[in-house]
Image (spheres, rainbow, N blue to C red):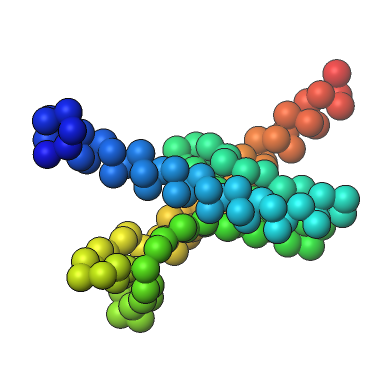
Length: 127
């Protein structure tokens, strides 16, 4: 139980803590990506595309990069068998979903969004 005495608060507090850690991780990465700001790269943070959340998307003339940011504490193990992440922190062991599955779902959504943007730009050029 938490200070409030409600059992649901512990889950909510853990969720808020995890989201805060994720946001801090994304901000730390953004600091290091600043060196690309004056280049031909376009960097997008926190994109929402067609039921798809992308932490960082880098568009360059020759490639597109998707970055899924994680900010875990403790000892992190990446399992080869199923791609799961295991965190060991003290006596606690936690399993996390497979981040590569999330990333694998994103390219088709990015491609369809880019096609829509290209069509919209072509329609604008014709008018």
